[in-house]
Length: 328
Length: 253
Image 1 (cartoon, helix red, strand yellow):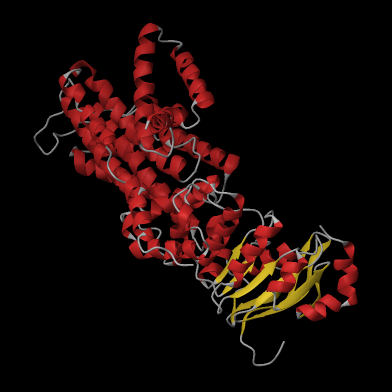
Image 2 (image 1 turned 180 degrees about the horizontal axis):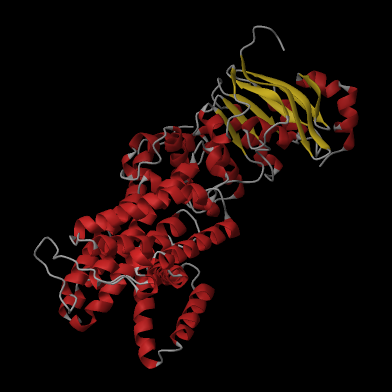
């Protein structure tokens, strides 16, 4: 059978087209600058969204791409937050190096944990991640001398970014800093999911049984992505510590682990932007619903989650993508 | 086994029990280079179990497996694939949401040990993509290379099973009912693709359709009750009274 010479080029083009920047993406990132100009009173919320979106991206990498379900990822968020906070309390408030160290710390712990994670699947996997989350939470609670326990970590002071930009009370620097870190980590994640490694992760998600049969050491892939994901979650936690100058136990809480999964499912897994969109919807809805009724705002989130799961199996972004594809 | 023959895959004394059930009993097989051997036997004879033992999905309770003279009995499945022992599955074991070009390129990259390069764009692995396209072309899948696997007709999914196995550049290819579920007229076409595989690949296939077996196999291994009843050329197998009794005589599915 003779294949036409042009065919491989078409296939390569098809693969390349999949990773090309679309106008939507450029518009999206330009829109993230809008709060600086039009909604300065919402800058602290925008900062929270940027940090939570980064956290959601870290979960998307393992859940959306590699299919590792987790209910304990706040563990790495909290480890990063406490690490960044504690080195600041002990005299090193330089934000960028502090943040990188926080991410590295969470990543190293993530790599160690990954050996346990790759041994289990399905319900056992969820329980192991949940259990590790509880352990870390109680550990931070018990180490009162280091973490401040239930009182939270106090006395964090973060130096100006590049020695120039002070963290102001309106949140200009905070949002700018968090947005920059989010964007850089997004670029890294985008490259990762469009690499051969990203393809291998999708292979694991689609059919883990086939992976050994094509000669893949899929557990080593899983360990690597788990460590990368933990590091990004640690960066998100570090950002929270540095931009709010507090770290409380709730950074390690089960609620944070569960919320981030809800955000991801709302937006749509396995597409990175779903993580950001879901976080935006979740936190804006919380902000608005809490204004109406602070006690029962999860009612609204519960409704939204059910509507999305029942009628938009690929999340809100997946739903939108289908409408756009149909319109073409 | 003839002396001096170039044996690529050799198993001796393979034994496997599931509890009290002996599913593989002291099986010895030897695949010469370029073989086109068929593995037949009634349902429950332990054919798939034997493939699982050879490829490492199952560990034998006793016995030894050698690939190109090296002992692979204790190796994990992925390591056996890297040494050139590749297989397909009776039930499609594909990547539903990946396209054939993605799936086969992944298999090529895993063989080259560069699937872990997370910093390099997938589209920049030109040689792997071209090789993958060549494999898809060999199997007549070039036209559907960029369609999601789950949308492909069943027969093409069966071919993709083989394409994935070929991406590992196997010396030995074990095909577990490659035409399972494929209509009879299509399965002949599928087997002519298998017959056209490079001559240096040794192929062992499980197949129920005796017409196909007699047409494409140069040698037939008959497995009954977990043990080899007979290994011979098609003519001998066809005329063997025991085979007629336990297998052909039954009017199998």
